[in-house]
Image (cartoon, rainbow, N blue to C red; front, side, top):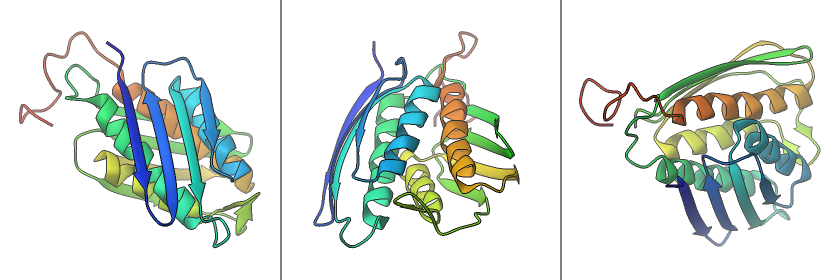
Length: 195
């Protein structure tokens, strides 16, 4: 049975529709009006082997904030919905991703408690049409909407393009690991018996 979620969010600031399939092949159809952000979401789908459709019409005449944050909310909701009852999944995932001079660690726990740790520094204010400070806002929104612990640690990196790309790809790889099944796990991986 495919682990797929279909989520919609309509506000005065954004109109978003997303479909996420966890057990995909890395296909994406993304359109947010922010070219660099689209590139990051495409990388997330491709490297996590997720299938992702995400279309957003946002108030970009204001700035990129509402579009990127709300896309994070919707993606987080889709992750939570697609994972379902979490029976049989590994729950934890981590990945150390190199991107030229950049090295980023991402760690995920799908335990149901939201938290974001974000130890990342940027050199400039934006890459393309994406404000670099919006990376934290995006992942904060994902972590809280999905109910996950999400941590990033930057070990090196000077080029903001590389840093951002490593964040999204590292997250994809860690999430793919956390959502994958382990036949040795009966029920959910928790001493409490539920997540």
